[in-house]
Length: 448
Image (tube, rainbow, N blue to C red; front, side):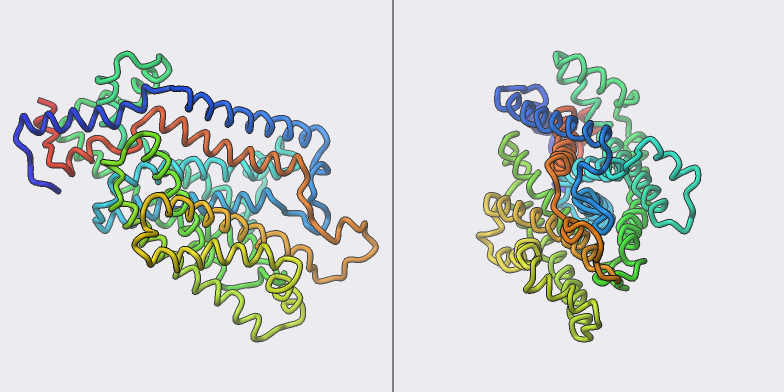
């Protein structure tokens, strides 16, 4: 923390921070309206596609008796993965006292909340009878990984929401005071979520204590959410899924996709909200190194995933591995490996690539590679069943997602981005009071 500033200088500095970080909340210019229209269009197309699926059943998708999971479950695994970044940055790095995460942690929590919420909804979209969702909780068996998956997803979402909202309470009180002419919907939300905050030292101590407790709690929950997700696959005997490393393999892959998603959000907010003085090149350099670290661990598990079964080449595994390396799935496989793992490790070793703009484009490729990786985890294995595919329609030999399936998948991504957009228009994406504290502003002096 910086040395405490004199009273007048502290007030001037605090006023500047408040102005810079709250200004985007009151700006709804043409570019924002265009962005809103794009998201509205995506969600409208999603709504129509989902209406068709509800009316006609899952037959409108490309899923069938063999490929019973498709893009929906790939999307589910991707959302669960990216949501873990909140735990990594806010909990793990925060608990060990890493200071550079201050302007990044709220963005990470916004991403975590949006993606965790959509992970739960994707399960519903994948159901042929979503009206029977309640039966999972009423009659679900404890032996079922799906019951545990829904449980940990909901628990993680709730804790992530609390980790997002609690540290924002001081900021909400600040922006409520400084933006009295904001639209009514914003002022109503701020009044509800400020919880009568007055900024006393006791209240700040309570916030610190509660956030620390939640940060400790979210670590096992976050590890459980992706470990249980991996059990949905690894508890079967299918070639490509029958693995003992899927738990840690999924967790490390989740960190890679989550960090890349946060980098994209950091860049967009930095450019559009004019936050160059708060989300600096230093922060991009640090999070780039974090991406390299997580990618290296993930690279180890990727080697382990294929080297051992390739060495043994059991019957069935050979067909699966060859189809990924040189067969019909080779394009997907190598795209996922190169852009989702290898490229970040190599390019981010160079300082010039750890600048905001090149990192933004690299992070987009990494996220696309991460999604492709989930797709080839889910689909190819189902097309290599233990018994030969015979006496079934020719379409059952392959899986091609249909128009409604693609529209629903894109729609879920659009809804996740919409949630982040709404949160970023309601609350500062960088913590006001924590930034002021880091700059040497005594909040007790400000509240006098």
